Image (cartoon, rainbow, N blue to C red; front, side):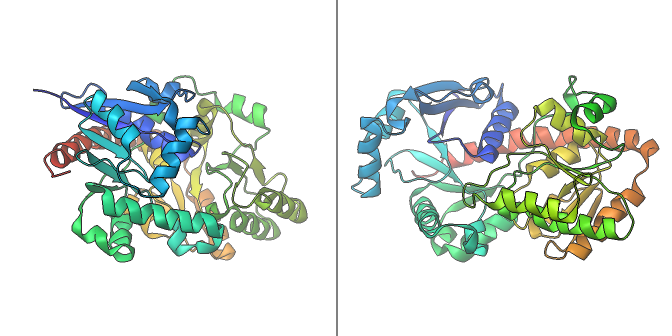
Length: 389
């Protein structure tokens, strides 16, 4: 049987969530008897994680600020018709189907799956500069109109798309729940003792593995820890992830200032970007994994914590409920008192003797979900490949 050639179009990959999504999907589909994965990217693009399980097609018009990049950008923005440069490249490599997220492109006669992670800009417009908000709105409208099919990581996102972009009702739509790579398979994670010494940690901690973006809601956790401290309790939250929000450059300083103001140096650690093995070690040895986010498409940190059998302390938002972790404490993300109570509850529930049992059960569940992730993507590709482009 002839395999279906699926090209993943990478116009930029500065977004960590996008890199993780592609990386894990490529790994889940690796060895497929139905699908061949191609990575279409610029000549300057480099990612060992993505290239490991894909055949790579490089082109200069995907490198920013090259002459051909400007030509393509202008013509596509003007909607003059075909994305001729891309169409020629795809035809040359006999690509059957394109997988992409957003951006303005259109190739008549080539089927496409557009992945839309979430609609944060609809719910939190103040988190975006006006130009970025308008660009995202235009981008999603264009994608919904021109793609062959739409893919979402959650049922919640699918329903939002139909609600806010009526043309989506006419499109074939699929939900593919993201499953993270195998964090429990990491043999190189440091020991509990090594992590404590390296990062100056308490004996127990809660792990918050989110980039320090404004919607990730770190400030509420800082305020919650202040309440916990003032009540005479000692809880430490260890944060990992990029210490930058390109939309609000002063946000990180605001968080750091709040920590100084409340005297919480020993209660919250902002470690920034650290080796992945250390992240998994921090998560594995934590008493719980925390995600206080105001909005998510499908949380990678929740999926990683589920794979390790960890207790989760989660903001009570629809996607976190949809991800359905076996062990979870939910709280109102806009209420520091509720967050403080949830953190204290996590400490009270922690039982180190039961952790191996939770870990073993999570591994069995994970293997089934990982296999389904790959096979469900194959099913979606098979279905879209029969649709009229």
